Image (cartoon, rainbow, N blue to C red; front, side, top):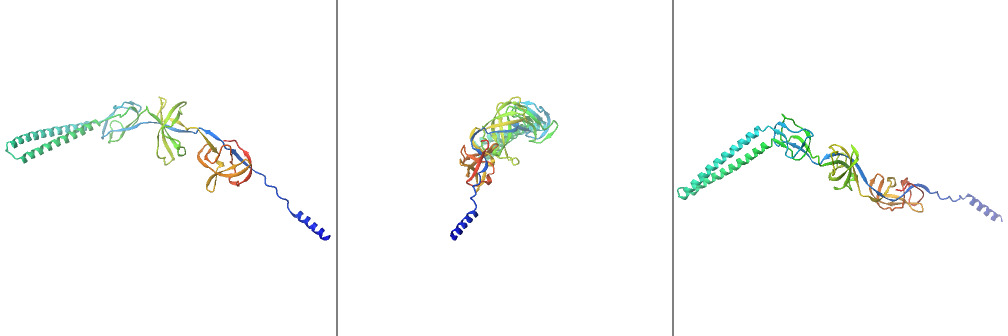
Length: 355
């Protein structure tokens, strides 16, 4: 009896010493968002400067002293109109000398021709040998070559005389003047700049992150800062093949297809590149993490369990990160504290506004 009592007492003591089982930890609160597809109008508005399509720097093809300038900054000129003139005294003398050389060469050729004809008569009568005639015929060929040489030099001298007049190569407006009458200039020195005011465009710098969908021929909307109420139609004409080394942006030229008199050179303009609308899955940047070197997100299932999932990402936008694969609309992803979650962990979802 005593043994039974002792054993019963020992059992009660052991039961009293055992700790009660701990309840499971409560679900961890987690801020999540419900993934949804959104039709994004991926517009990109950049600021640029109005530039001419054609901009020509004009200079004389020869050196000399400027004796006349016929235009001023702001003057409208036509193709072939004289812009300035050089002193043509020296070139005129050179042209006259070249013409005199042509006449002398032609006289020598005429004499050589007559001599050859006489020698041929003598050969026919057997008074001289054929070798003597060959010598005179060679002299005639030399005279012909000298005539051609003199004519070429005369043509060059005449061109030099015409080069003393600087003419416009297109219709346009004079935007710069770099020389005045009395100034001696070298060949190629820029005298004036002419731009085609009828073909205007906007030069903008596009960030490299936004170049993927930009192509020649894309349509854009243009607004001048001087009058933002009026819209102009733009079309991407040229995209630089290389980024600027300082800004890492690409120079893009957008033609203004309906430019009017209100569009002035050097004005500031806003260019809105409107891309095609597309349904995309976008998540906040805070939802993205990296597990084992792979881009991942924490998906919360209907039972409140958190599990990582690898995803493929697209471009970064103002609203977040585009997910190209790995997520479906309607799923929940954690957007805060993603670095502290554990696979299979129970969470209490607190839903933020859906994207």
